[in-house]
Image 1 (cartoon, rainbow, N blue to C red):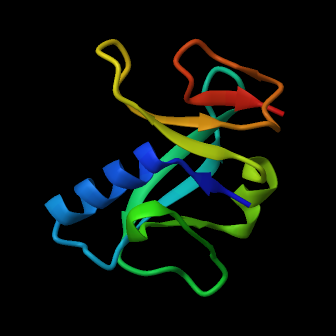
Image 2: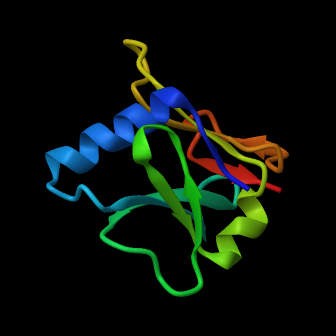
Amino acid sequence: MIQISDNAGRQIRKLLEKQGMLQGALRVGVKAGGCSGLSYIFAWEAAPRPDDEVYEGPHGTRVLVDPRSLRFLDGTVLEYDTSLLSKGFIVENPLAKSSCGCGTSFSV
């Protein structure tokens, strides 16, 4: 399961509206690479793929996760940071044993 914070939901909705994808969703996934072994990936999708898990969030938002990535993301909370130093999506992943300083690479 993936949880979407209110702040993240608000930002997802804002960015989807900006792109004219009102029925779209944010894809969150994992790929091999990065300084810790695995990296988070983000993409905008018009619709889910047949095998995607779809998670509903605040403000009518959806997050899509493929089954392979879900093994590494189960229990994650998707946040959005609005501080002056690090504006962007933050993945609070309970399965990550370590992560790099940039926060986009992790190991399990």
